[in-house]
Amino acid sequence: MDLFPHEYFMKEALKEANKAFDKNEVPIGAVIVNNNQIIARAHNLTETLNDVTAHAEMQAFTAATNFLGGKYLNDCLLYVTLEPCVMCGGASYWTQISQIIYGASDKKRGYNTINQHILHPKTQILSGVLKNDCSNLLIDFFKQKR
Image (cartoon, rainbow, N blue to C red; front, side):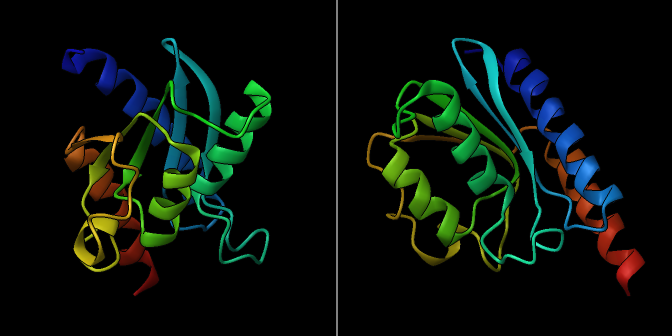
């Protein structure tokens, strides 16, 4: 797949991240795509739901599996603005998602920093899609916090 569809779908994930930003949530957004159609949209809701597991990816996995009527996402792509953490990476393993495309890397808590073998062996990874846009949103959010 060329980069254009990846950029399109990452922009959709960024729209979700901006919704999180507006709610004073860490601005991470995700969309799940099946057959070039967005089947799930989500953003961080950890503050809103008072739930440390309410990451954008976890919300998106639940929405996508509900949409498809099954627990596996092996024909789906996850677009997320920040590299998934170990929890989300582990959850992606169980969904058997076919590909994860993320924007910004997470040098402190990303799955790749801690345990790059946590993903399903068939899951393909593409990183750095709209990396600057994704990173800048996070930087702006945390600048406001300090």
